Length: 137
Image (cartoon, rainbow, N blue to C red; front, top):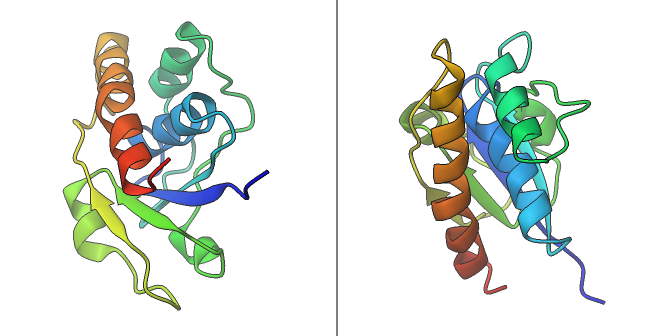
């Protein structure tokens, strides 16, 4: 059994896109990755639309909460994925070189549920294969 690769999904608020990406990667890559998410300026809570979009896809949404990037700096990260341009620009320097992948997704914060559903499906369609390829899974 191989050790899962750790993927950190980074966004600004860690309340929508990065949270959905964390859950989707964990689910769709079936234990091949340890998915984490964080924000450069975390919001107080995860957006209800993100939670509902995950639930409607049959994905677990319990226990999600925004985390600050500073809490992740000691983690053994194998790949950093930025999902918004602001996070790409403010991504911290990690203690050791870490491969990075940038894939911008629309920010559905404050929009109707349909926007969250579209972003969820876009993450699943584009990010999962990109992470699989980047980590050679």
